[in-house]
Image (cartoon, rainbow, N blue to C red; front, side, top):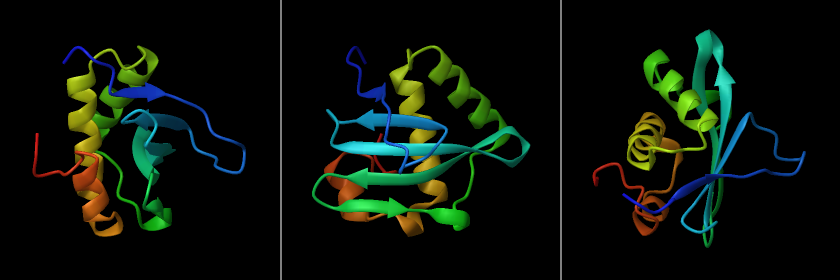
Length: 114
């Protein structure tokens, strides 16, 4: 994969999170937080045309190893887009009951497709 599908972005103070990613030319925004035991957790995901899914306290974090990979990728400006996509799809899979399936399909984040 040669193109930069994900990129680091920022959000206003009204949308607090520890990590901010944009995807699909800014049509999708993913906010992640540090969670207990050095793990990362998807806090919210928003899609143009659908709105924002707030996962809240019921969100399921990534495991420790995937969380460390995420942090390393973030620190290195998301150099390995393929690996990042796999990690993000895992996070989505852990929280699929809270995220609109049709939005995931439209933006190619469906966990059943690689």
